[in-house]
Image (cartoon, rainbow, N blue to C red):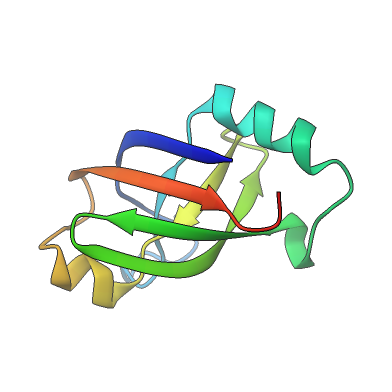
Length: 100
């Protein structure tokens, strides 16, 4: 399964030092991912993904966020630097679920 979307980068409130920066997957796509994943989950309910953003591609995990009702994707500092992104910027992201 692959999801393409545009999303704003945001900083996790519990870690305001910008080391924990995320984008939220669309709610509809998150619902479909939850349905397809069933019981297939790793620690913290995470699912393995391959991500493309600009010229960068990497492997990571998405995590469910009950407050947002969607999965969230961490955007590590090296990617933000390579793509000249900061919290508040909007990025075009492609997420491919590895295990589905």
